[in-house]
Picture 1 (cartoon, helix red, strand yellow):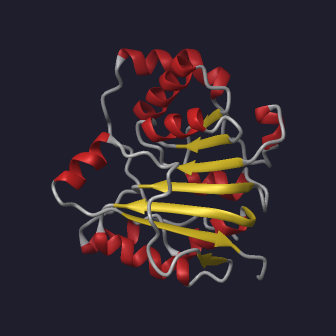
Picture 2 (tube, helix red, strand yellow):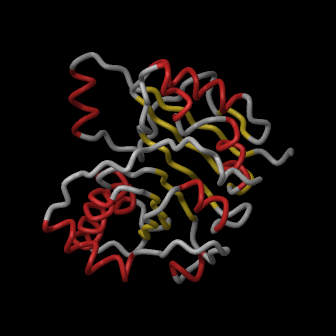
Length: 227
């Protein structure tokens, strides 16, 4: 499945301010915790140095949730993929401060990574938390979770692996539910939206939104064996 020539990206590389701490983290910690993008299959067992469940997170933002989950679940290995350098630096700083050995980072487009680096059936779980909602209707085509991308993502999951998506935009939640339900390789684990799993911590941003009456929708689908 070759999607790499699509003209529309789901992100914009904004010139966000890189703090001194984030820059220092990238300079000093990427050689240790980072994985360079290379268009060849990645051996995740070799990367982490052990056999353990492997969880992919796409678009980890500033890394608060990723680091928190990894710290709470040292039995799993977490591969985070993010294009924005400030977020990469922020996560690396958290990883070092917490002494985490089960996190690795790829600073690159998730589509390229999935297509060219990740073998079929690699992941036990996938997290996509609060992807850019592109709220204006004319920008909906930029949303990440479109059918071709979901099909590619599902192919990189092991049988019975889970895909967990969370969003605070209701119309995007509805679209995601329709897209995931339409993918034959996935099956919903709930009648519709799922309760927030305990492993996904509430961020400060999310907690503030909930106090203001904003909704959050979690979707948890499982990879099935049929093709």
